[in-house]
Amino acid sequence: MYLAHLSHPGEKLDYDEKGFPKESSYADESTKSTHALTRVAHWKAERTFKGGQGTDHVSIWKHA
Image (cartoon, rainbow, N blue to C red; front, side, top):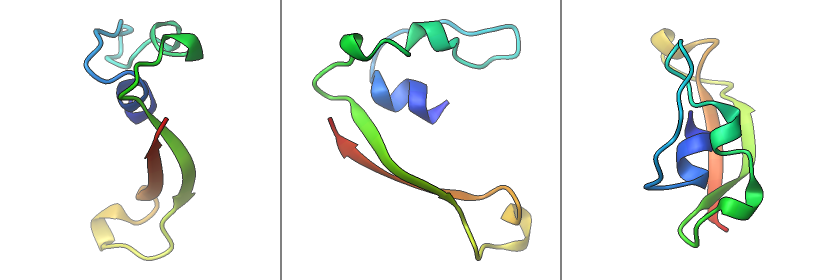
């Protein structure tokens, strides 16, 4: 979800039957806007609150 929206901010994306953005609507790198963000790092959080254990992740983004 984050990859789709942050790499194509403000653009209308197509969604599948489960409510997730279809990869075909954001996978094309040539359609990124000048406001797009690119994920430069992503990892699973080692420490987090009980509610997020096993599911929390950390990402670092930069302007493309």
